[in-house]
Length: 136
Image (cartoon, rainbow, N blue to C red):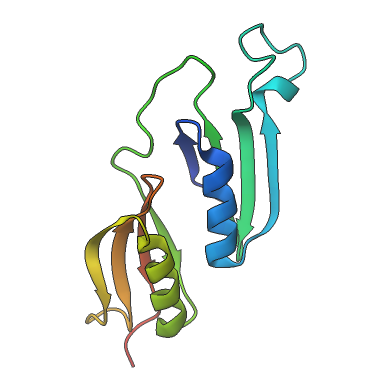
């Protein structure tokens, strides 16, 4: 049984998932809009918000949606997504891309447990922990 993160956005889910697919080389990007739901309630019928989206990142799947139309919510409050990289150079590249228009929490660099590690909050409010394997 797999555990898969499910993120919630405030109207920019489609843009965020496309960005994550680009950063991590994701595949199988899928999105269903609230307006496409069978028997969509009146408030959803004209909505372009994402009801469910997902992208395959390596061996995992990242799922996400926008909050339903008319619903406020806190996007990614107190949650981080851990992304393991095959090597420090890849981890550094991902970290740099995620940090653009975001905020660095822990600068990227080698640690006693990783050849490259960093924490960043991206432009969509998602906090990422990016790490390569153990230091050699």
